[in-house]
Length: 369
Length: 94
Image: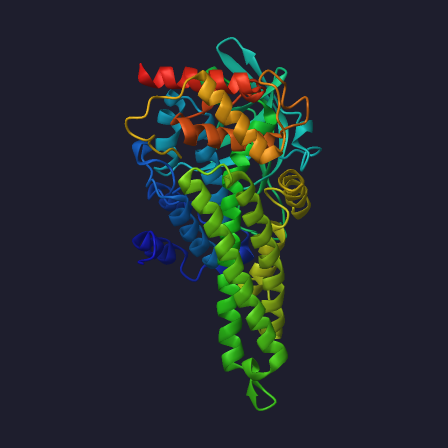
């Protein structure tokens, strides 16, 4: 089977080149590169063709995401946030909103999704950001933290309270009252443009409230996060592929005690476990994407499972890769050093390990007598 | 995320939809609620499960549940979900 989106891979491969290390060290991506990816529809390959996207399947988009993740988790992370914004518009927006925003997100404008707040992380039911009607406009007030990609974004999809219910509203970062402050030194995905965002009485037209608002907060968040989770899961597959490749290359070339590292059994075990991690994570992501593509209700739990399994394997696999490369990889910017820091963040975002475990445990309780 | 229904098959009526939703709930949650029972208040389902219901209804009845229809009230009872499917199907037929 030919690799899905092969020519798109070549494009992103050329745009990223061997820059991931220097971007990581600088803590910044060239925004022109991100805009080019966006204009080529590569930041949300699953957006429908009728709205200017490539209309890829979840499986195709997932393999593409893994490829980008193997090159640079900061670019992949921007892709996840942008893709989640596009998915949220597609799912929550009315036809006019889809027609207005999606073509912008497939032609070079950049978007990010704002959930977390200083006092609302895993428990988003305590969100304080407020969206309130004001004539034919709405006013948005609140404080968002760790908004991936916000440093580069033209548009933010902001989740907040809307009367007794909730809403997601599209806010241009150029609107008066939007203040963006980059997170100074993130542990991982250092160039992904994480930022704190303050919204001071930001006025946007009421038509920017997706689907008219008044939805249930848990349902809004669950909808948006589903895309983020499958994207992160495939991104972790990419991290594992990069780690496996670096570890194998090193174990083949580096000789100690008169033979290549790969012939030392304790090192070989790391290679075996990395291969197992990459394969298991690939299979669990393929299963979840298959559920997306076939419209199976199992998609909800399969996606959480894929995210949880892949993030855990990526974190442990990246640690093993650093162990194999030892001093050769123990330097900031190196592919395994990046993987080590980036993978740790994957155990935290889009539902921490513990939140995923709670969801999976609740599922276990409902399917067994 | 929808597949075409079997050609030539009459569209499901309200009773068929209610029956299918109840069966799905039984299979997935081991519960058999009354059709007007509040599934969230009674702890039968979570918001994660509401998402499963969205995908189930879309897949089974060739409807798309998006935008303002993603309200919890539309999934609160078996009757509410049945009405939602009928309304969306009517809208797509017209």
